[in-house]
Length: 272
Image (cartoon, rainbow, N blue to C red; front, side):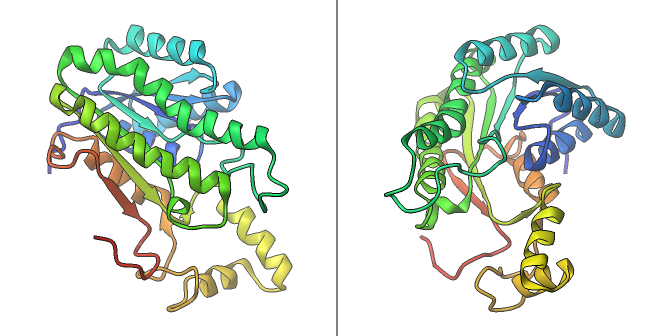
């Protein structure tokens, strides 16, 4: 299937590592010019160089702290000057380290940590959407995909759950506001996903349990294990990227303002 992506221009936040990097890679392989965004300039530039060499595509670094309105606007302006347009925005940025920093019971959660999580994940996505939407409206075509997470559906983390739930609400709101201009907005919920961080996380659990990392993963995804899924294995970041690619494509017009859960079938709840 020709996804109609060749020649498109994209910005991917959180693009130096993890799911964001995997998405940037697959977009570049489809012939998309990609600007990747992250705070760490050195790591970001190395990622852009590596992705360009690997995909034979054009991947540029857009160093940016998404909590800064001026830096977001500057990153979009650079992408426009380099590419001439921005057709696709993937909001995959997150808090430093990738996890919510405001964890624990409400008595101990720090207000500043809560605000930082929202300022990075939710407002970071809002800032980038606000900056690219005028350019998409001018072309009467655009795709915005927000990468959120399934802790939006699970109690236990005041910050992680709330910030991810807010991404879903923002997705629907932007879809209703902008669908009439040829712009679709959708959200993807990954679950436990294999990224560069996975080996160290498994190694830590293995040391705590006195077993191998391979055994930790095997037990975690065994049938009927509490954290397992229907396919009984960890979803890879590239598989989240494939879902995102379709939502970014010419073929995805029928999907707008929706949430796509990409966990390999985690959980047993039925959603209508």
